[in-house]
Image: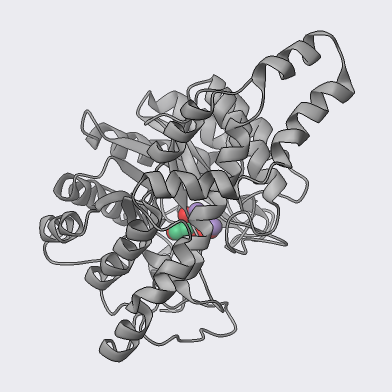
Length: 386
Ligand code: PSV
Ligand code: MN
Ligand code: MN
């Protein structure tokens, strides 16, 4: 039997971090379709993020991306967030949009380029000091396109050295989250292609270094929940970048392509004690076609639905079936939870939190969408097309 009050309490306590770049214009490498009313600055991105939090109640932090969200005064930006009921979340570094990084950043063969990359990462930690952010999120575009282009092992050594220098700069309460991605933009070798490589580096660095699982960064058919279960067991799961993929790094709304996979991931999180402050639940998405704020609200709701289903798994019945070797019964317990319509439960949870039961409809009625179209002209690109 599941304890419904405990499930509701967990759902009320959930926190999903939204990314600043999801609020800005974005596109593919073919075209950025600009939308009306998008934010013109990091300040306005926070204004939009506050709407997502106001209507869902579970999106209290916003990830920044440097330099896309570069401002003069980060403490003032943090204050702007606080005045809107938000806090600034992970600081994402960018070592991929500078000509100097053509052949890599922290893995580059030239020490001067590596220095420039490390200087940027250290600057990100300075920003964390000002914003009060806990996590530095690192994704490296480093890799090679052709066999022989560079020495695979030497690149790992350079990577390890750079990470160690940045790790040593972290404060007591700060962490480093290392993201992996199996390909793109490099196609022959990627310097952090998989969880194993990220894990090996994090293990060497120490307890403040953890792996972040971006759900879109795996080959088709990869069992992501196994990776999650393993990293949790080893105390090395730092967080998620949630999104959906059909083919590559699509960055579509989480839970849109494969809600069953998201449920399986969330079940392992729940089973492994991952609904704790140690694991950051972040979105890493872009909304190229659809309206951004409602898409982000929808994404948060998708995470909530998968979480609710995961929490509803009858763990006792599941354990009994597993011990008895009853394959069908065990599978049925899991499927029962997945097939439960949790939307009425979530509506109830929202009402108990003093929110509208239907966040998307409430947002549509709020007039915010019309207000930003009227007031904002010349919105920002997220950074990808910049
Ligand atoms: C590039 O693949 C990427 O999507 C990574 O997942 C990062 O988290 C994100 O961009 C922001 O830099
Ligand atoms: Mn990511
Ligand atoms: Mn990505």
